[in-house]
Every structure is written in C-alpha cells, then in structure tokens.
Length: 426
Image 1 (cartoon, rainbow, N blue to C red):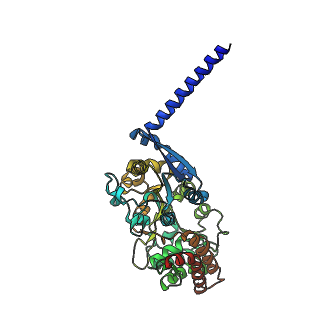
Image 2: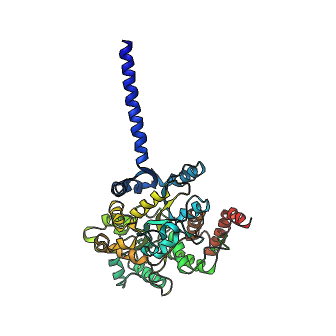
Image 3: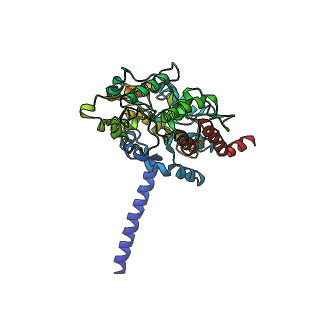
C-alpha cells in the first residue's frame, strides 16, 4: 500500500511539473499587454482584439473595463502604486493631467517611424487636442464635437430655407420661430445651463482667451467672452429658450413636440433622435455645422473624443504601439463605429458608405474641419462643470448680471488655479 501511494505521489508530481513547464514555456512564447478602456468602448473593443492577435501571434491583449465615473481616480491610483497598464483610453481633456505627471510618453518617435499612422490622417483640430508643450501624447481613437440639430419644417415656416449660419441669423430665426407660437409655451432653441459647452464654443468663436498668463489666470471677464456669454444668456431673458433643465424632462420628446426647434449637441444623440423622429417626422429634422461669429461658417466647435496613450512605466511599449496602429486603421475604425456609434478619428474612414450615406453625419464631417480644444490644464473639467455651469444658471435666471457672473466666475477659477500658478512660479 505504501508503494502504491508513493507511485501516485510521483505521478502527481510528474503531472504538476509538466503543467508548470508548459505554462512557463507558454509565457515565453507571447507578450501580454494590458489595455484599460472605459464604458461601452471597453466592451466592444474586445470584438476587434481577435483579429489583432491573429495578425500579431506573439501578442496577447488583456482588456480591463472601467466606468467613466471612477476611471480618473483609478488611473491616478494605479500610477501612484506603479501599477499602470501598457496603454489606455483617455478622454481628451484628461491628457494634460497625465502628461503633467509624466505618466504617459510623447509619441513623436513612434509616429515618425510608423508606416501606417501620421498627422495628416487626422482632422487638424482633433490632433491638436493631444499636443502639450509641443509634444504629442495621444493618438485620437474616436472623435466627437457639437453641431446644430434643427427642425427643418419649423425653420421653413419661419422663413428660413437653410439653418442659421451666424449669430445674427440664429437670433433672427429664433425670434421668428417664437412668433409662430404667440399663445403657446414653446421656444426656439434649447440652451440648458447645465451644459457648459455652448458657452465655451461661442466664447472661442469670438476669439476669447479663456485662461491667460501661461494658463494660470481666469479671463472670462474679457470683452470677447462677455460678448458671447451675454449673447447666449439673452435667449433666456427674451424667452427664446427655456430656463433650466426642469422644463425639459425628455429632450427627444420635446423636439418632436415642437417645444423647441434647435439644440446644440453631439453625435451620441443621432440614434435617439432617429428613434423619436420617425413616421411623418422622419424628414422634418436635420443637423448642420455651428453658426459662426459674424461671417464665419461653419463656426468653431469643440474638439472632443478619446485618445490612446502609452504609459511611461510600460515594459511593452512596442507591442502597445502595434495595437494603437491596428485600432487606427480605417477598417478597424469603421468596425468600431458599427459597434459603438463612436465617430472615426481617421479621415479615410469617413469615405466608407456607412458614413457617407448617413445624411446626419455630413454636418459632423464638415464641423471636424473647424474644431478647437478646450484649455489644456488638468483643472479644466472642474472649471467647466462646477463653475461655468453655475454662473450660466445664475445669469439665465437673472439672479446676477453678466458682468457680476463673469467677475465671480473669474474669482472662483483663480482659486482653482492657485496651486498651478504657485508651482509654475516656484
């Protein structure tokens, strides 16, 4: 009996050793790269990975999903604990923060040696969102911007056969739309004060420099931003736009019901508007590039989306770059668009029929030729979401004048920038 147990023990030892040897051998045959992505993008990018691994048999990709709400904190914690991935998806407004931490690497050398990827493949304004102090830190993965959604039928009744092309036409069209419904609570345009983007868009159109003095001093009280801010607030004061978000509980229903006829928003709303604007409403709406300041058309809009970055502590930068190149191919971009509705960053992908045959996408393609980034500072999201929106709401409700609102906005933003200013001075 003891001999039998000894034989079993030896057999188990041999099997275990064989497994260990096989695993260790397997580990040496490929490189595993860690790719962190957010939201639905993390889910759907896994469907593209098998083709990449087929083309690169020596590389395996491990995708880790993170919710957008927790991603920034998780990435900073990972950096502090030396546990970062090889590459990651980053929102364009996050790039400055991680570049300032030296958490991600400049990509010029990799771009210059690439046979498949170059600056000319991208919309210039989108590409510039990833340039910090003259260095490129990210490759645009997918893009978004904001354009004008409008009711063609209502504008036509107001005497417009085309969407508003400048500020003057936007205000004129809004007044004429409002006059179509003299005894009804209906509006021309929806400009919710909990959306900071239109205020920044119009400010940039008017050539406002939002943050001055080497990005350490708020400049919202400048004549340029004051003009833009006051222009948008006037729509609320003249009752051309509903005040606050409580009056519009469902944007799509309100658009279908003619509660408002124009709305500035991004590509993520195309599928939803298609669902609501159907039947006899299906041909009653369209998208158009942003109206511009004075005679500029299309007007400037914001460069948004997500980029792909490589972390400085990665031991697999070469392999991570191969995945970035693969995800930047026009074919990959179109496949990703079909899965997610995220618009391709690569211009070549826009030649595909799936985009060229979609009437609502034409405005976005045109708009991408005139977009600009928001100020490239880590504090920008705090400024935009907690401060610009706050003072837009107060001004729209006439609780503060434009001058008072922007003076207080500057004061609050200067406090946010105090640490940045001190670090640069010292």
